[in-house]
Image 1: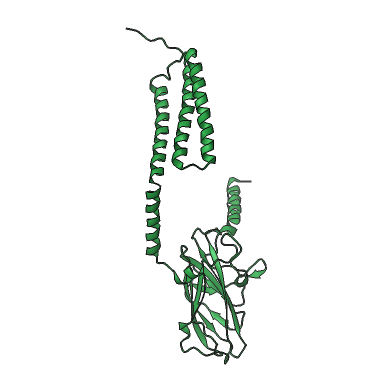
Image 2: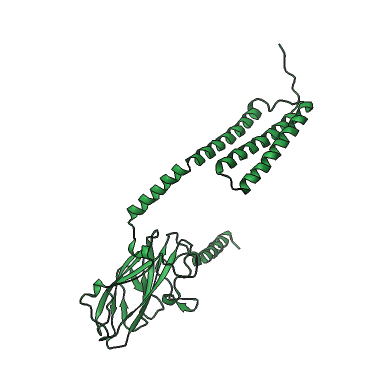
Length: 315
């Protein structure tokens, strides 16, 4: 087997394995799990198999009752607090006919359903009512808001909107159907939408409050890291330029090691108690640093006791 063929085979397998994980940016498939997407929903997106009220699906231009053969321009909107783009699929169960507009398309292998052709949050489509009275028309629509990572990740969310257009003569005809909008989503999603500027301002305010509240944590944590780095640097320079640590006689090393070992063990037990008791971070940080210092002291005693004796000139 040639090297070129091996590389080609590995690349093909990688693409085949990666393909199911990529999002359907050009529109979802018609069926999944032997059920159509307008009824199944985009259950491959998000953290669970259920729709999320965080996603607001709206469609305007929906008449209360249709007139046979009449065309209705409808605008589909999709909103989410953080995810700005997504897609949709809509179907009228073949009662009328759906015509795609800019950014939408007829779903492949479907009996006339529409979906997005490019990710977005606003699409215009046209629905043509049946040529004769076919009774009430039921329409199902699913929309998903994605986080843009092109994967079926937990950052995605979806929702389903179903509604009915009454048959001719059973409801008052709207003079201007474009003024009528049907939506689904929680209250904040429907009525508390924020602009990109508001979302960014709130994000910056959260960051500022976080730094103000946890400033001491950031400062002393950074200081602790610098102290540890300085000790490590000192060890490096001592070995690199001064020949290593000075010798410590065993008569001094043994009692020193015992004292430092007992203190380090005590600090280690105290640190475990502090963590288990959920003490404030400042106490735990101080105890942790003292524990590290004790460990370093035991280490220094050992390396000095093992260091060779060096005769020094005395003037």
